[in-house]
Image (tube, rainbow, N blue to C red; front, top):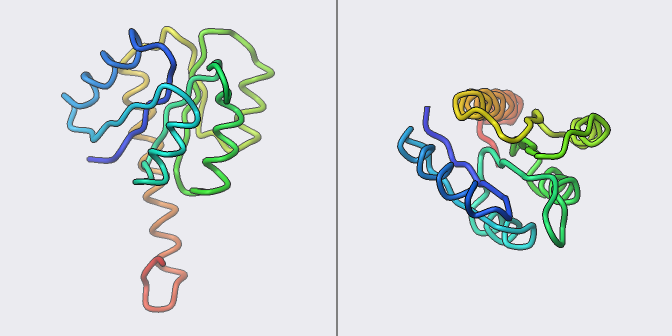
Length: 138
């Protein structure tokens, strides 16, 4: 299954190796190191799945999640954080996140979570296609 992923994290030491591993798995992956550049990337070409770090300078992950779900409601979002906080996890889920993972995250766990999220997006798109006159979205 091929899908587009946007990774958003201010830690280049985390972001770059993760992008390379996901690309080796056949995914189309872009990076942003803050919320503002993530919104620019989404405006240029919306991703199927976004991976957002919760703690970033400037716009934090929860604020970015809210913007993404308002503008691109079908895009699925996986939240990542190195700071254990059930409260933040629950808030992210309330705001529409697909799931929440703790750093350091196992690559395979993240990869399968991304596949699940992309699958859910495809199901939502298919339901919309079936409900639209003529069977097309948009």
